[in-house]
Image 1 (tube, rainbow, N blue to C red):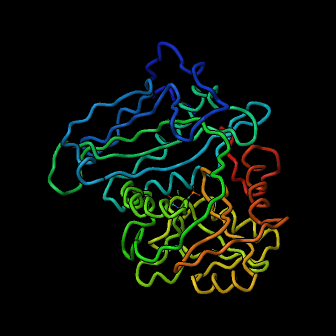
Image 2 (cartoon, rainbow, N blue to C red):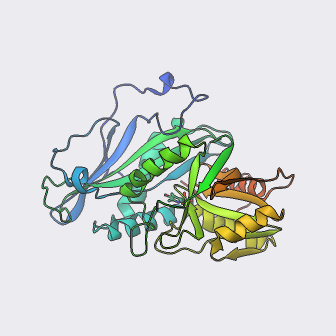
Length: 352
Ligand SMILES: *Cc1c(COP(=O)(O)O)cnc(C)c1O
């Protein structure tokens, strides 16, 4: 792999010694370098690595006015031998371009994506700490930079990758509310894309939910609010008896890498998994008769996030505490693959 064509502007001094790696608030500390590449005159050009820092954009840059922006979320992991791994990075590459296409943005070239990412991670390898739970969160994103405020797609863009060291993520006891009024996404919309605006649109309803004592919202279908779809940054699984259930992908739901990996692991471990619509009524009924054993979210940041209870229609339901949860089973399986502790028959782990 020859990445010498990617010019590196060196930093004067690393800030790594100023960082307390045992006390990281997720997504608030950034590494020394960032990757940048511009789209101009119809092509992606000038991929460079430079010191992490402010970028200069005109106030008329379209991203500020129309939210033409997409992103990804990945992680780099280190094993005991200091080797560095990614988890299914081909999926993130594919998905950022699916998101970009939906927002009328140009596809980013595979070579630049992986060369830039690998070169950046090798430069920043000291920011990836050993130990299960420690990782370097990777945030690739694309923004419309063309200075023009007519409401149409831009002809200039910037692709960047920034890195943020992360510890294992514990969200505390998560109590959720099933959405009855607001929606995250609609048929024919952009819910399946990691489009920046999807997240801004959730902040207000989530704030209202927080005020009522719920940490997150489980979004329901926008038409009827009868079917459970996903959380704001996580896909969602339900366990009724010993059966695992998750909603099928559609244009309202993000096709999570963690979700599809869990479905695969379930099938390979003789866990009965159903990918089908899940109704609010079914889950409330299962909670009432004691059949509802678990609800958990899945996503790159938290891996698996167990949920302790939910609210709907003015009623609150508590989930039982169980000994052998699916949540901890899948979390361990995934972490063992990600940190090169176990075999990886699926070739999900990619050494870089
Ligand atoms: C990123 C994201 C997920 C999780 O996807 P992973 O690929 O597993 O990280 C789920 N839902 C939404 C809305 C997301 O943005």
